[in-house]
Amino acid sequence: MKPQPDPSQFPSPEFQEPEPTWKAIARLLRWDKPAGRLILIVPALWAAFLAAEGSPPAGLVFTIIFGAFATSAAGCVINDLWDRDIDPHVERTKQRPLASRRLSVSMGIAVFLGTLTLSAVLATYMYRLSPLSFWLCCAAVPVIVCYPLAKRFFPVPQLVLSIAWGFAVLISWSAADAGGALVTETAWLWGATVLWTLGFDTIYAIADREDDRKIGVNSSALFFGQYVTQAIAVFFAGTVLCFVGLGLSLGLGVLYWVGVAIAAIGWGWQCWVLSQRELERAGYGKLFANNVWLGFAILVGAIANYWV
Image (cartoon, helix red, strand yellow):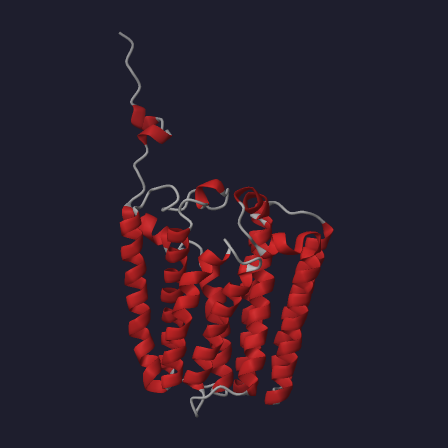
């Protein structure tokens, strides 16, 4: 009799081991996609270093970094819990752990409560620095929890996300400022963060607009329609103007302006790319991720303004 081949020598889907639960949880927390975490850390660090004139407490920097990871993780989990019946119909999200039923709803709730608890523990450190910072942490929670619902009834849900992102500036500034207060310069930085987030998240939304249209949910990419590239250009131009106002108000030096110039050129290039042709889905994701480096350019310039 002819010997039968060993199936293990020929890997195929039916012989592959299922994904371990810990890996599915890591994907639920988006730890496999660091760009979305870093892009939240950046504006929080902008605020901390500018408010503290380049020298925020080391404990605050630690808390900002880990707090951003915990808070963004909680936001990702609650987003997937709300959207578990929508995500299977979107190409980019159909393999997410809750959408694919790799993880149960009860597991998702448990992970959400765990990340929220960690965020609360980190927020207690903020209270030691500034009670206002702590209460701003509390105020941010309803916005984070409700953001995923916005796409069902609000025409520009990315604005809700932008406001949630803006809390990173308010929380960090009030914690780093010697008086524990929000000032005029905070408003400039908050405006820059909100407009920047509107710009990069609208780019991200373009990849999903056909799926969103079929499902019947809202997005800024659908709201602005054929003028979406022009809208993104306006958001990024407004971001630059806010950074100009911030730099003038604080009297920042040339290295800060170099960072802002690099970011402005990068945003201009992104708008030019978007105006030339329609990209593949992955192309919009790459433009989104590119914003992390543009944000870091401004951060490095702001820090160098005080250190060099």
